[in-house]
Length: 536
Image (cartoon, rainbow, N blue to C red; front, side):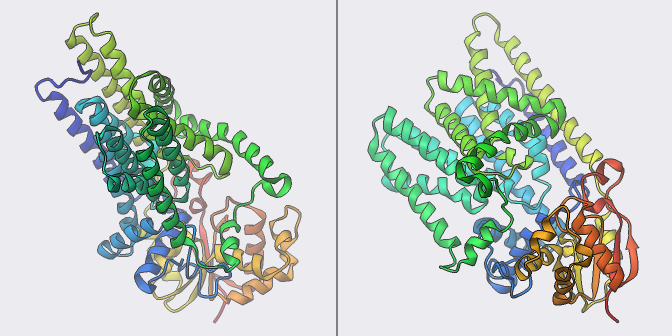
């Protein structure tokens, strides 16, 4: 007997109403929550490079970028950039078009989570999984950002669907097994972080199909497909023997490995995993995020005790991916947590359904239906409330209005140095020079980079800073309290500000994008931006 047995269509109506409310909230907040980020501009500029130049470069970096990013950004997923380029081609090269692309990935991920949930736990439990995942605050945030995480989550779930087929097929065809393995490698072409899930799927399928079932033919063919997918991924991203390939990969990845070697770096990475987990399951949305954590713990404990091969594979994949992420990756972003969220909801809801069915003889079906429905509805409403609260608290101003004001201060044909977030406003008819490009140029052209990154340097007087500005020759410079995507205010921003003030004249100021002091503490768009004219 299933926990979420439908009554007279009331549950279907409720699920549809909740999904509609979530979509309406998304549509109402897509232009304000959160304000534009640097990464969104960088990813979108690569999609524009594909549309306009036929390569996977980053147009924020003019021709001649020392790391070859103007021609081949090897860190970016080809599949993600290609799908983003299609949406920008249809909807126009605009900030909202890029965010609409993220929304499509969010909806696809929710649909795949629903399919898996239906296959594993039944129709209504599957819908509960999809709604819980889609309204999760991390998923809601990720769907608002023109970043690859929502599409990466969808591709990981597609690989999970292929594994479920493999586990249930009586005599799987070799081509199907090979394709299932290749799909496990495909998510890495949306985001390189997904390689940890590729390894997770490989280990989980080997253990379940090879060791437990002794179906080594299936396990070997699956592994062959996985290896072929990884080889194709590597071939697509490897530009040749140019040593700048490795420079590009490591340019901004300062890890403890430099001081203590790979082992010390892995230990340091693993120790930071707890702080990341606290951000994912508490700081990101307060107590409501603990629901996902509780479902994860309950689901993992149940999965390995149950007799379900599918549950064991999902649990093993998620845990292996988490361990590898903790050991090998130093970057900790809250939105990365959304890649694991579907696994926690699938396992947690499955555990609750199994628990309810195991005590079925003690309680009537009607009571179990009411209890299960009440629990899910309560969780969904709590998550929806959290999404409303976060999108209001961290909302931004009218970005279109800010764009218009900035374009009025920077005439067409000018070379302008500014934060990457202003790329959307200044890309047409102007030569846009990202502040990140300014940093890269300084790093690669001058030996004073250590002074630039040091805490005691006096950059106001360093010739390197002056020469770098002269090398870029901007006609206009737009400055706020931060430099590029770095937190501010900092020494780098202050040093550049003093230099620009000494060599240029103010042309105008626009107000910040955030409303309230909370936003001002976490975004460079929070403060006012002053445009300086450096020529004419």
